[in-house]
Image 1 (cartoon, rainbow, N blue to C red):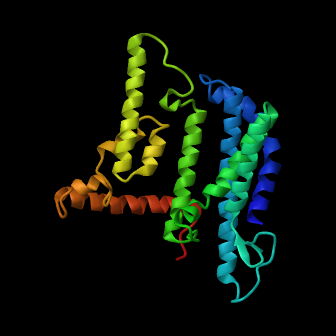
Image 2 (cartoon, rainbow, N blue to C red):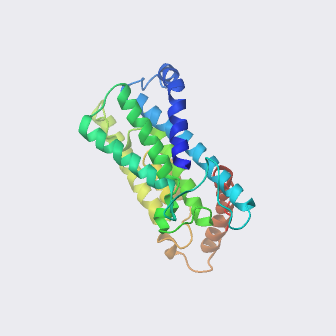
Image 3 (tube, helix red, strand yellow):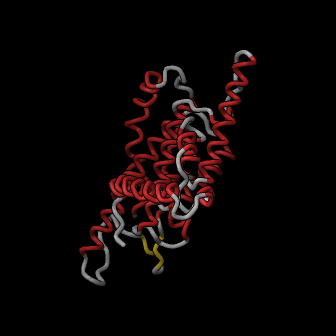
Length: 274
């Protein structure tokens, strides 16, 4: 019921937002303009954020009730886990099905206008439902409320940042346009793109995959990750001598970073229960 209620709530809220979104976008993005593509992208982002908030609220409510229910009590009410023949159907299943449906309709019918916005919003809902359980399909086990489950919230935050960057007109790798201007300008833009890709690769080697992904869409993010110390146990950190000042500093920074980041993730997604 979690996924069904989330989809229904998003569908009910969407009509009240679309007109205002289309009118506000030109003021928010005067340089980019309210192109049909950016209006659809705005719909996708709004649906993604709303679905994430509703889904996390629902799952935290379900956990709250489960923690206080007597042993062996059957869940009741509209907000509860879905069981079919004793199998718990996770909400990522409905998200995957929705993404596949939207992809099929996009290929078959190439919707435009308002239907393109509907498809974008539906994709945002499906993406949020799926990525909310990213840790489950990464570890192939139910780690939703375990410390490993924090990876799902990180995936949600990363996706939202990427969508926002695209909405603001970021053009990763120059995919949407060709650099204009003099030869020097084109070479400068190309050089920045190359440096950005190299920095993203260095982030991966330093054990910072999320910075690498975000850095591909937000210039400068990957550069910061590339020049800072590698995370312990990453491929790059193998160059550090065990017990050396650089190795000890990397370990200390890792502990501080994990503590700060986990507090943010737990605030958004709820703290682990095991």
